[in-house]
Image (cartoon, rainbow, N blue to C red):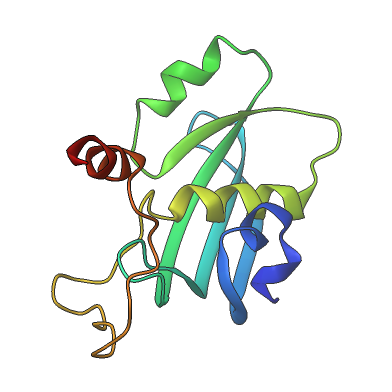
Length: 143
């Protein structure tokens, strides 16, 4: 599916190119607890926080989400394994919302190209950042 179909993820995209492939399977844990196995293959583009150009991201993850009836159980399940997490058991689960949440958890907080990989501005391009109001005040003070 297109990453733009996921509402929270769509706000983070550089463009609408890419794909989010997923599989959700029901299972029982070794403690006979209901769980979901969520497998994601994500290929999308976000804005690099250094150069504001497209940064391609390819992510593959498989996670087990244990469905817990009691909120107190959530902490003990989450401590078991890094790819195991717990979510509350609800009567109806919106799978697209679940996928959207899981992809958002995979995204880096401040995505950026590797050091030296950002494209430099073309020579002669002017920096569009506004002058600091304090530098303007210091100019007035000198006169």
